[in-house]
Image 1 (tube, one colour):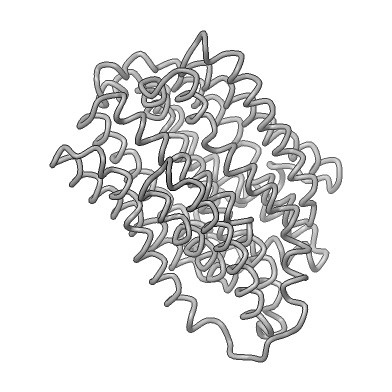
Image 2: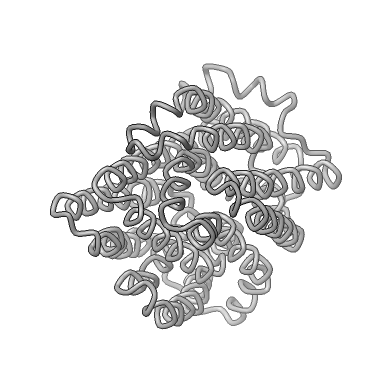
Length: 418
């Protein structure tokens, strides 16, 4: 019970940050869609989607690699961890700088934020490897989205659409500085161990490709809609699907809390413990997100009209989103469990399949159906992304998202202890 209490505390903290971030992001969409035309809003959403895709690729999934090695190094008092952190930062920031140069003509000043976006993400991941959720919750879950909302609102007040990308990017700088400060006191001073870089990237390399594909998969639909349907359709699609960030961030919040525990359990061969963690977090994820999806499906026509009259017709997109996310969350954190078990190549292949399905459906459906076609394409890829690892976990380990540990997760004592 004590270990579940620790997980509950970390999970509640992660979901609290995720909820705050999701609310701020939704309000940001409301501000942009109400203050600017659909074409201007679509151009902004497309630019930020490209920036997030580029940063996601440049991260090389080094943050998850750090969580893996830092969590495993607890028994050795984190010997050599500073070498792992340097080995994760240097290549990732170098790739981010290259992306900045390549995208500067297309994104302008927004491209200059890419190195800060990448470095901040990796440093915050390192703090989670040490078992600390507070820096991620406060900085990534609260400070960053609140700062973006404040500055974007200021750009809206002065009616300056050209400053929207800069206002969105600026908060990454204080997040980076504060993340570095949070990590400074946690890394023990010890001599550098040879081979840490090779060890880190031997594990992380397959996940680097998978992380890049995941980053593309999360936001490719917005870019494809802009290319095939125009910026106005991209704005409609972004607005209607903004609530999917609730599921993504809730899943991320729980995953950030449970990932180090899963790594340790599977590294020690404690399959029963891993099964417990998987089933408990799946129940929590369903309880937290299903009311949101059901409510969004019911209220979508009204909520979308808050964004502007031209957005009310996107209610079918919201229904596709809600149904798909309910299925996805019922699968639990399948990819987190799969990679914690060391099956990074299988995770990569799953993402390749999901992305290919999304692109094929988008190209086939967007020209005729616009935002709804993009939603159907995303739905096909999302279902593949969750159902494939679900089958693999059941086939390899007999793991299921629901089982005898599910009822234990519903006990009031587990939540009150949090």
